[in-house]
Length: 459
Image 1 (cartoon, helix red, strand yellow):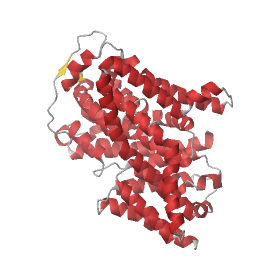
Image 2 (image 1 turned 120 degrees about the vertical axis):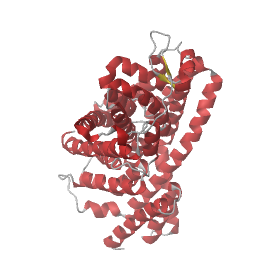
Image 3 (image 1 turned 45 degrees about the vertical axis):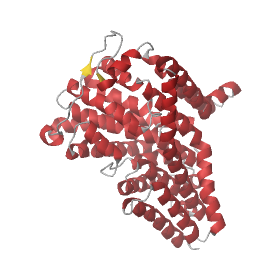
């Protein structure tokens, strides 16, 4: 089959996925499998090869990241049960003060808390952020909503163990330790610069409280009686948090932090070409996250009791199912694109000395996200399209992963569940949410690709 027809069929397959999801409201999992099946049959790979590629692509990415996603989601569910996030927000306020709280909260969400399922993390943190907004001044709602949106969305695509970051790393064969280190190098300046840009715009009159905010019924906030405890615990959890105050916050989070430190240590040893078998074993991402999960469960068993730990784990299993299947079928479509030969075709048009591949990944991911409204789907699909190009031009796959993640952040809008949750939980109008969420995260998307391009030349 000619190169032109392979490109045409690939475009048709991707457009079909978009139309199935947006126009006919098909489940994304079904849509992705249909797109992969069409591409295989249309490019004359044959029935047997098509089926084998779909199942093989699913199995390959599950072998890479399946356990990691499961362990991460389970750990997040247990942390949620211990009310660790509520306590952490209060601690950040005391430590950094009202003016720097948006930066501190956004960076913490984007880095440390990515094991928690995004919607769950948003539902937990948004009411706390809304109650704290008046503490940081007149633009409190705008700044806190922007900080939440940027931290949540950037974290899921750049930072291990964010779901999209894990999927991208698995799809492109990027070692997770390397993905975490490069993601951390990128995410810190992206979050800080993006929030600073949005704060500058708000202070220049771009935020109108009358039009951009709506009536919000604030939940009563109680001061904790423990002088060592953080204030401003939101809603009906205050009493429960007091009961769990016997365990210090650093102890609650220590297993998660240990897991991240182990993964980073393994990556550094690999770069330094130092081999210590015991360290290599515990620093492997699967074992490190398993250690973190077991440690978190032990701490939770002491803090909240075995019954609540079991309840949290059951909830975590329910949350992880859809994530795992969606990630797997994203791998199926990517494998089919590779099998069809698109990578060889695109590789003819790029050279190792140009930034075109990274910009192309960013544009494709951005376009897919605008159409589909899913950060994870757009990131995985765009990376899959150009993944075969990396070995042909000598471009490090980690930069393709980061560029795909950056592009998938562009234009979060009304098709996104995050958009509507931020609107309702932060007391914003639709107009206000378009500013804080859509524009704010889009700024982060642009800042990210502008930083990724020089990173690809230096690192």
